Amino acid sequence: MSETIRQAVAAALLLGALVIEAIAVTGQYRFHYSLNRIHAAGMGDTLGVALALLAGAVHYGLSMNSLKLFLILILMWMTSPLATHMVGQMVELTDEKLEKEARKWES
Image (cartoon, rainbow, N blue to C red; front, side, top):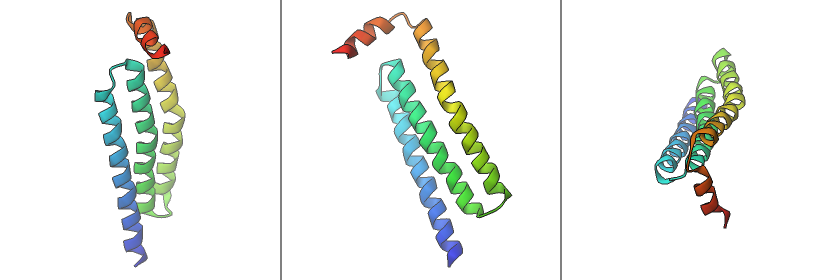
């Protein structure tokens, strides 16, 4: 019985990750402004990957594989904001229409 409950929780977490990533992908196509797209990608990446790795950890139970998944999660949480920030800086340096787009959002 406990194995069935553990698998159901893992499936629910994986389904949650799928929904979050689908919303993030939809945000990628709906937003027209590049920095808004970066925000959608960053938020989906953080929560979606966390739920997927947590689903794997629940599936494996207390084992070395769960520890590895938690270490991957910590690494992703440390590097994802940095990568998003670097992409934002690249947009700031290369986008000629950035000032015009930013003025639209000022008011």
